[in-house]
Length: 208
Image (cartoon, rainbow, N blue to C red; front, side):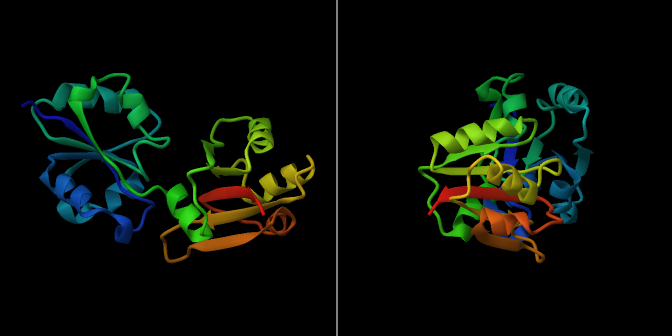
């Protein structure tokens, strides 16, 4: 059987949350492709690396030209099935050409830290979305979990929702989950709005 491209979920960031099978498949690979943070988790393997930047087409062309003769592993944050490069790659390769191994999503970890189930939650991401979409999701769902970005951090989200009649909701914010400086805040939107300086975060907004 010809080589398959490995698409590996590396978890939320800390090596503690890296599944053993991910480490094994990365070890078996010739080339690792991923963001700098992902590649740093495997620096001890001394593999050839290709850093993913804004020019995804460059990475795509490299994979197309090399995957049949070299074992390539694409490292994606969290779980490949949730807002990752898998969506992009699946448009350019058949499903027979790649193998997907799941990882622990930071959003999944956020629900665990909040001690909430997520089978009944609306899952989304605010990256590239208009903030009014979040308002629409919350009007239709009791629980919404999502990835935030630096343009619309959790405290600003809380202020926006308060200004739009969402005073009765609570929120959980998980910042830099799995890292030593992890910060978790669970409270009313009013309380969340008073915090600032949020870094990489996930957020769950829910009814009491």
